[in-house]
Image 1 (cartoon, helix red, strand yellow):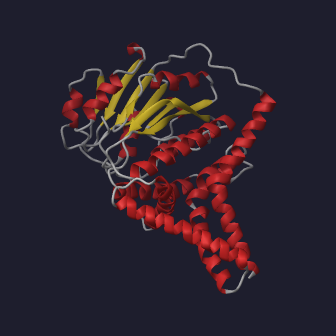
Image 2 (cartoon, one colour; image 1 turned 180 degrees about the vertical axis):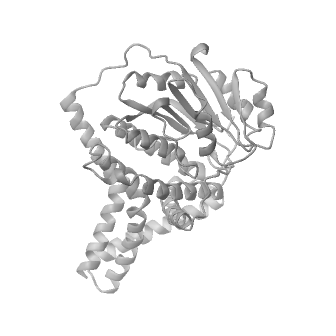
Image 3 (tube, one colour; image 1 turned 135 degrees about the horizontal axis):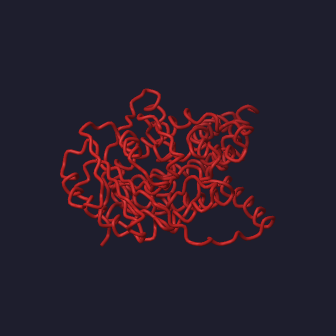
Length: 394
C-alpha cells in the first residue's frame, strides 16, 4: 500500500509539475529576478547586418509563389539580404516557379535526403554573418527579419526564435487544440528567454549566427531543436522575439496532426540521446533545470506518470486505500471521459473547448508513446513528408 501511494502521488506531482508547476515556478523566479535587477533597458540603435534568408522546400508548387512574394516583401534593406531556396528532391513545378525570381538563389539536388541534409548543403553557400531559416509553408510579418536581427547586437546571443501563430482555418477541432497549445508554449518561451534561454527554437522562424552553425547529422528528425541547442551548449543564449512571427494553418485533420505529433515525439527521443550532456547541471548550470523541466519530462516521465497514476489509483481503490483514492479515481475517470467525449466531437469536426483540452492533452501523450516505439524500432525517417494543412479563412 505504501509503495503504491508513493507511486501514485509522485506520478501526480510529475504530471502537474511538467505541465503547470514549471510554468508557475518559472514565473516566480522571473519576478524575483526583476526585483533584484530592475527593468531591462530597451533596444539600442538599430542593428542591420547582412543576412541570408534560407528556405527549404519540397514539392511546394501550390504555396511556393505565395512564400516567395512574402519573403521578398520583407521590410529589410534589399542590399543587405540574400535569398536561398533549397528544393532537393522536388519533382513538381516548385523549381520552375522559383527560377522566375532573379533575387533568389535556387539550390537543387535530384536526390532527396531529407530537410536536414538540404539545410546543411545550403548553409555551405551562406556568406553572411547571420542566417534566417523559415519553413516553406509559413508566412512572416514584414518586420520579422529586422526584429530578429536586433537581438544579435548582444554578442552573447547565438539564436533568436520567432513566434509561431496558427491561423484561423476552415479545419476542424484539431485547429483548436494546436492553437491553444502554441499559445501556452509561447508564454513559456517568453519566460524561458527572460530567465536565461529559450529551450529549443521552432523551425518555422529561427535566426542564427552563421559562424556558430554546427551541422547536425543528416538523420536528425528535429533539426530546429538540435541547431538551437548545439549553439546553446557553446555558451550562447537563445532569445525569443514574439513580434516576429510565422503564420501557418493547422493540420488538415486529426490524422495529420497525429502523424506530426508522433514524428515530433520520435525526434524528441533522438534529440535527448544526442544532448545527454545537458542533463549535467555542473557542466550546464544555466540550462539543465529549464531543459529537464520544459522538455525532458514531457517526453519521458510525464507520459509514463499518467499511466502509473491511473493504474496505481485503481489498485489503491481495490486494496481499500481510503476515501481519498476513491475521490482521485473518480476525478481521473471524469477527466478521461471528457477526453473521450472530446475525441468523439473532434471526429465530427465539432469544436468544444472544454472537452477538447483534455482530449488534446491525452492525444499528445499517446503520441509520445507511439513516437518512442517508432524511434527505438528505427521506423521514423528523417525524410519529411509535407503535412496536409487546412485552408486559411479569407
